[in-house]
Image (cartoon, rainbow, N blue to C red):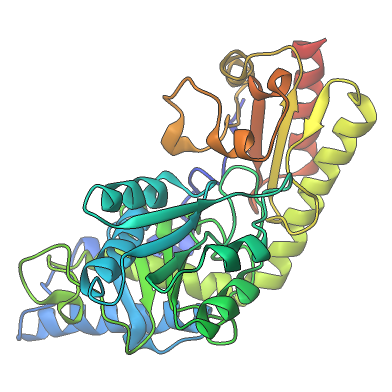
Length: 376
């Protein structure tokens, strides 16, 4: 039996169209984009075309897009780079308690260097309180970083409102949108977003490629030193093939956005409705069904251990996750579920199921069947 994959928040399969677009740059078009001869110039043009494709998806200027090696690097480049370049203006950063480790650990690292960080609370659905955000602002606050959508429970934050608060206090706003890009409509211009991080492997492009949007006029200190690539913001020879891949994936996401959201929403709602009908006393839905990524379902199963359930489902060729793939080796309860107040009896077995365009209702039926057999 073929593998049934329900962990698209961890990574996605490269689309055939994306791989086909990349192939020439893995074989014949091997030039270095910094070289002046024709094969190098062709590589440079391919990079600039991808920059336009990413910018079109986000509705920004192509010269505001910088390519990185991952969403984590984009977060580090945005937060550390901005903090270092603007420490003369202040040393205070505001973020939330449910951020991805790429943001939380970056902020904790900055604390060791003399910066001050406020980690604000979230409600039972994982959304921040805008009034609490306002109260945390100080004269020394230079940056607010709040994720667009949570990687575990799928909660979408009130990004436009957060950005407006930041703007009204002359504070720069960054959002980790790794889970959101391609799954919800994002307009950085209309939303007043100053910096945005994204990753290729969440939108059917390869692993090892990310991008960072930095609004023109915002200064960010270089954190990888060397050459002058990426408009002197990030040193290192460009990964041309993967850059072409993320560009093509963004183009596809832009074209298919509405149908993609409809499809994932139908799959998620079908899965949750079946669980609620057939296992009502065994489950807890974590997070709100409103303001949620279309393909995300985070469900706790009482009386089970997450690792045990994942392994038993894997024996049936079903792939699900216990939360963030970046934290899968950790034994302590999820910091996200703890922050939203999930009761202790439900903390041990929270399963994240994240759907993709290739999933079917029949696959969900098979998942439900096996869940009932394992948990009964």
